[in-house]
Length: 347
Image 1 (cartoon, rainbow, N blue to C red):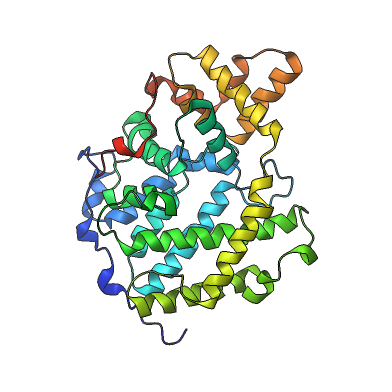
Image 2 (image 1 turned 90 degrees about the vertical axis):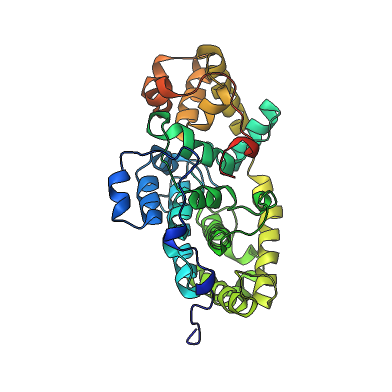
C-alpha cells in the first residue's frame, strides 16, 4: 500500500463543521469543548456511557459463550473502532469522527443481539432497529435522560451505519459514515467466522473455499479487503467497495454466513426467555413501555429472570433489583415509546 496517499482528504468532515444536536444545550463536559476536538469529545462521552458498558454482557452472535475469547458486542465495537480509524487515516478522512461513530454504532442493541430485535419487532408490531434505538439512548436516556449532547454528525453516523438506514438519508453525507459502515461489516464478518470455529459450530474443513481466497488468517483477510477498499475508494473519489474481485468474494462470504449461520442461530429457548422478561416488565412496571425496559437488559439479566420464572413458576421483583435498568428506572420516560427514525430530531 505504498502508493496510498489519503486521497479523500478533501472530503473529510472538519472539526469546525461539528454541530450540536437539536437540544443545543450545555452539558457537564461543555468546559472541554473549547480545548478538545468536538468529535473526540463525543467519543469520550460514548466510552463512558452506561449503554456501552452494557454491551459487555450482550451477544455478538453466540449467547453465553464459555470461552472468554468469543466476542461480545463490546469487543466487536472495539474491533470496529480500530478498523474505522485505519480506513479513515489511510483515506485522509476524519478519524476522530469515525471513532466516535464506531463507539456508538451498536449501543442500541438488545439482549441476544439481533434475536432481541426480531423478538421486539414481532411482539410489538413496530419494527425495532438497534441503530434507531442507539440514537434514542444517546439523546434521551443517557445521563438521567438528559442525553450525551453529541454532535449531529456523530448521531447521524450511528443512525446510518447500516445499509438499510442509509436509504432514509436525503442528500449528501460525510464519507466517514461509509468508512464506519465498512469497518463494521469487515469486523463482524471475519470475527463471526473466527468465533464460529472457536465455538465448534463448524469444522475448519467445512468452511467455504471463498475464505482461503481472502487469506489464511483473520488479520490477512481483513487487510486484503482493506487494501482493496482503499484503492477502489481513491479511484472513485468516495468510500467504495463493490467493483473488485475482493469485494465479490467478500459479498459471497456474507451470503454464506447469512444462509448457514445467522438464520440458524434463533432458538425457541431465547424467544421464550425474552417473552418472560417482556411480560415481567409489562406486569410489574406497567407505567413503562416493556419494549424499552427489555431493550435495556443484558443477556445475563434476561437469562436470570427466565431461569427463575421457569424453575419457580413465578416472577420475582426482588431478583430484578440489581439489574441495570432498575438503577435508571426513575429517570426513564413513561408510556409507550416511538422507536421510529422519523421522530429523532436530528434532520
